[in-house]
Image (cartoon, rainbow over all chains, first blue to last red):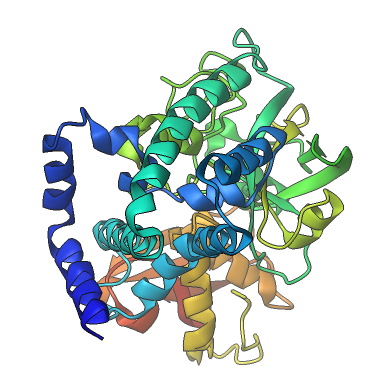
Length: 320
Length: 112
């Protein structure tokens, strides 16, 4: 009982003073500890590590279990928190008053609170071994970001508009029409063109977006399965004006985030490299690095399970 | 989910309430907060998806739509229709809040 009371007080304190707490950790000797360790940088790090279908990440999970000698029960605890990282942010927002619950600043504060709560739960569960987990995550993250940046750079031709990006982080979403077979990309005008909303496309872009329907082919290297000619009928993840498959000087110039390499979704750059302060074009903290969103039916055809993420290959050659 | 829960049968210019539920709005807000369906706070996308869900009317793509701010953090979207009339949509945030996703609170079809 006493332990629970202390934990609750700690959660409340961390919610009020999370910034101070992190700064104290930094002052404790680790240089730039916050940015070095995703546990303290408001990211869905356990979801990313434990719920993504990817050969490298799956090996990382095995290594995590071996390095720290974690039992299956302890791994299940981490996986459970991987799902909670995403769901608790939404549940916490729903508990606020309507006036407070929907602006970007509140969203960001809630995300901070949830991740502080996660860290306290991990500390409580793992006790003295939490430090080992914390260190492992920090070292793995540095290695993962380096690996992923190089992995992606090797797959991208930066000289021209690209036909294909090998290595786009995919999440799953519930479409407007239940059971729809579609994907979402972060360019709203592709959706507008596909749905015939021509009058809402700026007149200077109507010719460029004038050859609908626009589709993509998607390949999941982890399963060898692919889907072809899937319509882009939704916008997201995170951004609405990030046509990252277009060069800044190409036939359809990238509208936003032209400082990023061709083929790099802004959400990826925000999540892994802190681009735009780690926020999307609306000012929300980017909690995962997704560059494409799949409906459950498309995800199933690619061999993904419910709520599972993946690094996939996408052919954009039919897009403006 | 953004589909209208009404119809176009009241074409006399009176407002028709959209009876989307709080639970449905919460579900949409959760999707948006997880980074999905990033157009849910865009008045154009919310309006167009709603109109698409109504049967028997079609937006005149050669016409011009207007979206204007109103009191109480609401917005009014007006789209010309191919039948010569217009549809007006009142957009609001859930529970009449100030920010976040938008939804069509009520709509009406009027003669231009």
